[in-house]
Image (cartoon, rainbow, N blue to C red; front, top):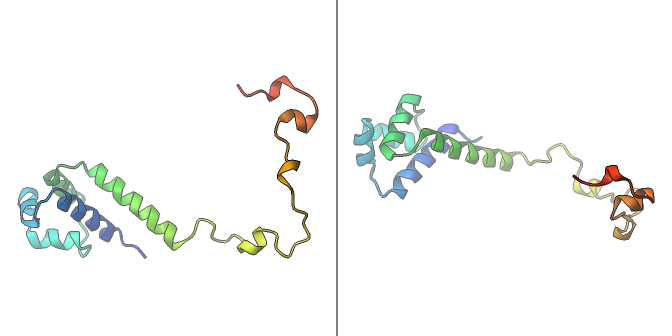
Length: 127
């Protein structure tokens, strides 16, 4: 299970390091103890919204940017833990292996609506 506080800490640390700043500089600017900021970055402490706002302000980054990045990473982590097709039949069943089905050739698939109906209809034209 991925913890939100760990992802948040990773994002904050990455932003700080990208700026070439030390924990001491950011903690002083955010008015938070160096030890506490370190624990937040390591995902050991849950930061309050007020503290997050203060850290983001010290980093010069909107809180919404940080939260968006955390949300994106959380979504990726969730996909890695539970594949998109969870609950779908195994691949060999989806591909028809062992089933009495005829393969359809690409030539058999109509290319235009006219080939399906054998006639042209005005309502088939894309707007």
